[in-house]
Length: 320
Ligand code: F6P
Image 1: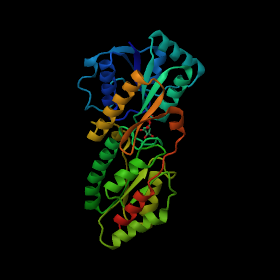
Image 2: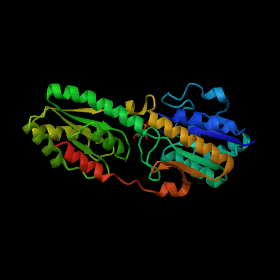
Image 3: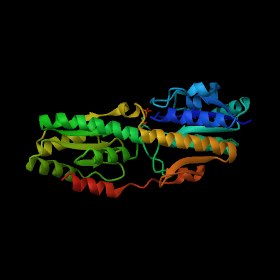
Image 4: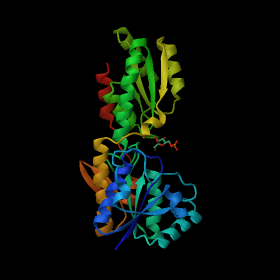
């Protein structure tokens, strides 16, 4: 019988629970023993292990957050922290581990892999910022949450004839802004991947006012190198239209995962547990062209994300 561990690390994302469920139930169906490790790499260092059975993951598929809890560990990147963690891995007899998180969590996974453990990394982050996979788990839910917020803000912006600047998460990746902005009918979208053209943003607002538009929506990713309030002040000063900001913040990280995220989570969790059983070599699980893939872990971290320029061009044309 093989023994595996599973942990979630870094910022939580909707769908992490669905992954935990898929990994635990697939592993149990292969007669593996599974330990859930609480609080990510911190819990690994401290030995916060609990054996999981089929009921440990009951009724969690639809829940946001992570039943295993999460943390950003400052100790794990140190040699001492890592050695302690590896000691726990030996103590509990782990043959392999599933790590759910973003690029920081993957780097931790790679370190463990280099120490001799087989690691399967699964992309659980709302940011969609991993280059080797088309989508990360939680991104779709976050986009839909932002979309709902845009619709609400549109109603009140229109009633008051205001411009609204909506700041969204994503760290250095503009995908949440791009997808939610495009589908929410934003006039302009500002992302870290592109330089800010403040003239173009203001021009759009003025042209809108001139043709009778009652409001403008500007979606700005948090990673853009211009403050949200600063941007709003410039727009208000130049266009004369009252401009308000909304920083959506952590509301984007919670909530019940969408069907799309649950599907990704279930398929990736299944794949990871099966690989641990039958092809134990460290991998980054992802999706590419609709297929679930298992990519070389080290290479996965080297891949840069390609930004969808066409989507931004579409926004420019459709929001005229
Ligand atoms: O990586 C997910 C994310 O929500 C980013 O979009 C954001 O920049 C960051 O985490 C916030 O991190 P924290 O929870 O530490 O404030």
